[in-house]
Length: 467
Image 1 (cartoon, rainbow, N blue to C red):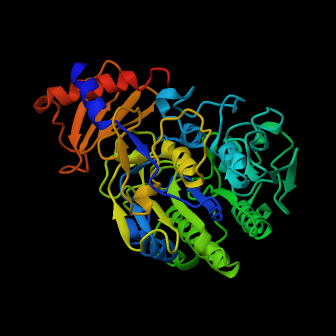
Image 2 (cartoon, rainbow, N blue to C red; image 1 turned 60 degrees about the vertical axis):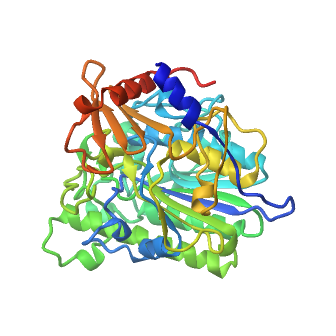
């Protein structure tokens, strides 16, 4: 423990925002895209060979890739809770997909931005509270939200309705032509047959997002696009359709692939095209140069709905996938672009996490009152600026910090090149050198007992109350 404290005193230091902004400078817009179950290897710019993602690849060429960015969790709901609150899984009430309703004490990044004068909006999967629960997004910092409030309902691309939340209203937005199997409220919006599937919910939510941008182009705004692509269409363990629902297979229709793989690829390419349309919209409205656009995923790739993550090498060189704490389950692609601010064609391997987003938003806006969080701003890294380190404060220098993740009884921690994994409390800690072994194939714990002890101590401290 003494060695750990010494290392923390030396390495885990506070970073003073190095971006000095004039008081009268226009506040930049922020658009944050958090897609669902997209793996580290699912984009061309991260090594994908079969699925076409030209718009996101161009975004990477125009901006920066973070190659060691970690999602909030290896499954959806806690991953979003980590993102919203800026607190790691050691400081969350859940670390798996059990139901959770956002509490009034859960201060969100949307509330932070609203306090800085931003209009806040979002589309897609919220997963933090059903209608009437008090957990709806309009009670937690969002002026507007359109999409799925419930986790389970979000796994259907052709529901009879989604939810539109604005002001103090939470209302159903009917989707024309989509038909319920029956009136059972527990049917989760399942439709009866393919010809009853008329309106693709993803397209509706995308249009709502674009409309939000148009409505608010003359003032600072925050927009979160929590697209459900490419999550499988599995409702309560039942798979409908081919498990990867999309209106058509597009350029993959004639491929000699199983239908679920055609659907998976078509979903990603469809989403990629809409990223391109979003960037075109920002140019049309002449706000591209004043908008920070970020793209990432909520966890690693799935093997569900007939899709197998290995078919497209969705986890790339990484071990594991969704529901594991090996790299493939938690390390995700990350791309950011901001013309004139983020140098084009750059890349960083510094470790950052979804719980760093709150600190980054606070840095970007010079927020003075920030909820207690585990984060570290990655804004200086995006802008290729030197971070100033002040000895003696709590928060770490990005090159020496230890990051934390967990799922159910599994835990993981990373410090620099070392990654520790513990599959359950009664299992020994595994240790990997990611610099030499990105696939986590060789456990080197026996060769580094001091590092193993330090990582074990950190896993305990990561769950202590945040102060």
